[in-house]
Length: 127
Image (cartoon, rainbow, N blue to C red; front, side, top):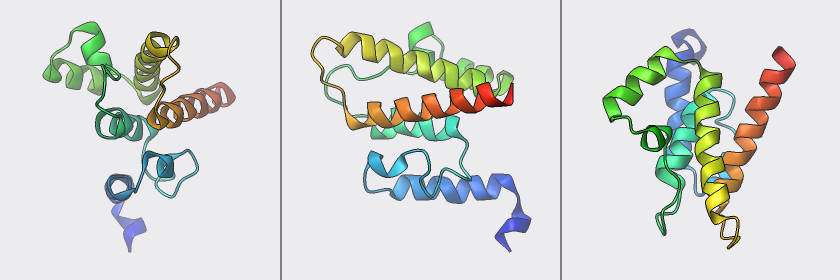
């Protein structure tokens, strides 16, 4: 049974569901993949694969602070999910401040914002 294969396998299967989602709106908190896929992985997917490419878009934390891919990978290994979500949230906030004047925010921004708020609420409750 799938339940015997563990958390990693369930996350992999959930990520396949995220890849197959018709639109970013299908990836809101509470969606089918949300139970088994860590929010930091889903946020990375939204920022890397679901964000429109027009304009400058959003910069990943590694781009904002000048890390290489390997350095960012090491950083992710050393930091927990909450710190990763905080770093991703800072990237989204930077994007939000840049586009605030023209109001041209994409649906990926809205979904990513919901994930950040949900994760922060969960962290506040567990503290």
